[in-house]
Length: 407
Image (cartoon, rainbow, N blue to C red; front, side, top):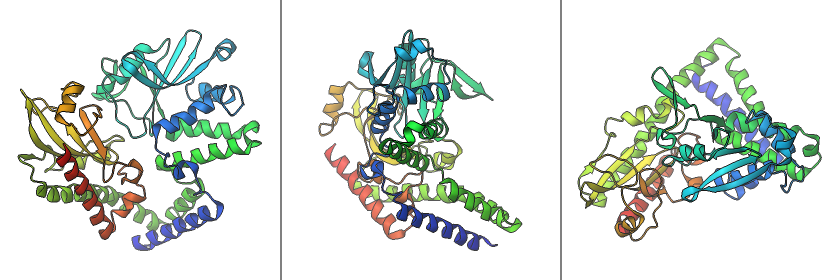
């Protein structure tokens, strides 16, 4: 089977499951309808509610026990479960908030949840210092390691001179750990007989499978059966696989090129492409689970001494734009006090995150409508339609120019 025919067959399977989802109501998902399917705060609230023995599910510590045993891999005693408390947004020194904390007897177990948000300075380091008899559990979509910026002085683990983790951190993933735990929760007789709990867990499972890029099992089996049914099909699939990364990289370059060409009309001086023109950061974007942070930087003005104000358009998993304050052209995090930031950006409340003093998503400040270059949502596939691509660039440039005007 040639490549075009193979793609047609796979498209037919995809359309079939799309129709099944429409008929069975699988698309009627409260997380999607409420626009909270990738909202870390909301997802943490749902996980917290399931873990809390006093949660509204009235199943006691049933789901907590499954989590402790199969996700955290800890040995709790009956005394631990009797005295356990599950916290959400646990406040520590500096008004930092740990997403989830399990506390019992002499243990305080911090769990930091990252879906798309970036790390903060010394975040995991500070959480570890807050922990009692526990490591920090770092939960991401695919089990990524925290940034060195977040880890601070924690002890790195090396493999071939590359940092693959930290001694004080346990990496967890939605893709494996949380999905496995939710499926175990779903298997419990108490869950099966209570429709409201069962359906919410099922809907959460579907959301996580989608944002971690996992196909529905039956669909995945059917596609793999087509691919593996003949030598020529497998050869065609491998050829597609070889070309796929190049196609995805090409789209990132196309987006950044189009914005760069259009942003010239914004009358910015001393434009600096900052590791962009040779596409070094774009070319390695898909070589890791995290981002290489490709983008475009523009010098705006000097603020004081060696500190400048720059505008930067960048891709994490989605596209965003913001202001940062490098010192001697080096990005070292926050270089100004909040009052100084307000003087520089009087129309914006500081949105400090890493080296950013303010940022927002593109094309509008709504993450759910942004093309996701890692998870490949509908907004991403729309970029392959020329009319929708042009509309996307128009909206991006309009909001970038508005941001510059209001600075």
